[in-house]
Length: 254
Ligand code: SF4
Image 1 (tube, rainbow, N blue to C red):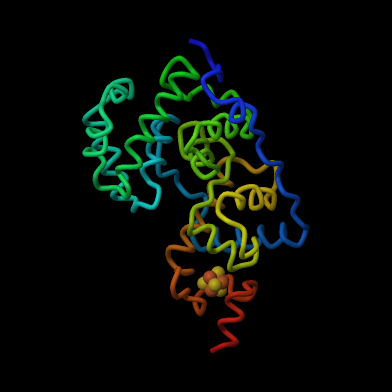
Image 2 (image 1 turned 120 degrees about the vertical axis):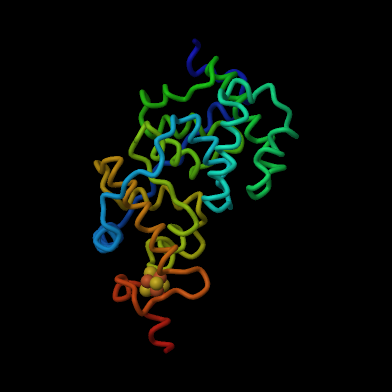
């Protein structure tokens, strides 16, 4: 097996550098730790991992989950595995067959060709359909390797490393996590989900384990789902109210 040959990718993608982690102020680091501490108390860290998929399967699962409810993406993933138990078999399937199989997710017409293209890119670069070798790389190297594949961004690369059986110390940021981080002032209002990965990771200790970074993602995500709702956050029962600028403004407004 030839591991890591990148010659199939454009030069710009091969040489794309990951952004250096943004520097975080001591005040923001302290705040990030305090938010983590309080939310871990509420949601009971350590949080059990919800997946035990190999990294390639986790990658496909992540691609399916974009803007899709967990139940629907989980059903689509199971349908894919039932129809093509081996990822090598799906390579020979048509885009139309894949699209029909994953019809329950959002934008199946976009996700079906993307899944095919991602599998083809892995096959071309690795010589086999596996991502297990990422476990021998540093987190930054592994994320850079994944993000060189068109269609894979910071959230997906971090999810593959964190959620899969690799259990690497990477911090994914989903829309709930991002919303809570913005409202509590950890990131600015104009920082999108993609760039927020480096900013939020830099606020947490370098030596945190995979479990602690996973916990951080999970508790902020859970808080966004259960308290800090998109339309009408329940600030009155939020344990972050006294340190949250958005909550303070809403409280003052009555
Ligand atoms: S105080 Fe309100 S806006 Fe701030 S994190 Fe809590 S629920 Fe969200």
